[in-house]
Length: 444
Image (tube, rainbow, N blue to C red):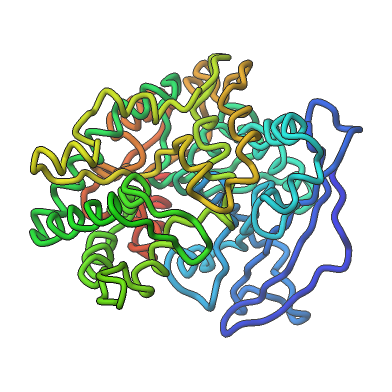
């Protein structure tokens, strides 16, 4: 059972009507009469698709958008642009803040202590994976559509959730679209990161080939950090390993250029000698901060956990198999310092200010066993929901080979494999990406 608050707020932007929705759903869907949490979602409708009262036309179908992550709230639209512009031609769009994110019941260093001990916090967060998100969506669908099916667009982790949706509740879906988010159905976290580090190396070297001076710039910063402590504005400590995580930029279409501009102005002269400039550390702090998205670290490896085993900081352990990523070794051997992507590591619980209070909670989640399956291969093999997926060639975050294997495993799924975009193609490509996926799914 789901309940919705009745005092929905509606506001207008040029070309848009935005309506707030709040829902109470069970924390644990296997115990529907137990504790409940709040979900927030924003309905977006083009002004041309409203009736005289300003409400969406009754016959307008729904498109649910599932954000990437885990741990990030949905997009906050400002007017009609990008993929949303195309979607609003024919849908009313629901931007869902998945549990723990955005305006839904928050889960961060400030609120999680309300749960009690780190053990109680970890138990609470164990209900925040894709299977729970899908169950949330189904309850919301029943409330909003009166039982009618809706379509779903899943970006990155939202695509993982969409594959879970096709596994757990395909009867709720009219159509499914996935961008950069076809997961391996059976790979554990170790296998995921064993495939990821070579991609991180390729992306780093490709960046240095484009901007040759950046290899020296990164080496210079790493050497500096070995001798001087540098703090980010929020009190996080910038280490060489933390600096390497700027490689996350290389997963987006403009990221390589943004990284170059960031690196070219890293140092400033001071009475205390050369130091990293405030402008540099401010930008780095914004890129690395987990203040607004701690779940991105706390739950990241759990999105790959399905075989009952603990993830046990898989990315950190697998990194030992790739010694070229050791920044001090790179300096000693006069090699380029390789950058990383979205990997999470136990040292982050010391260096990142927003994660320090959650250290034990994070450790307990990494040690947790009993993670169950998120996908049903047999049900996917019998799929009848029209599905289309954009697979970005050499995607930094999702292994292309895994995505292609999964595409073959989902009956009727149609793929668009492209190297025109990076992982953020649905944003960078605007109307064109969504239009292509809709055409594929509809067999047009």
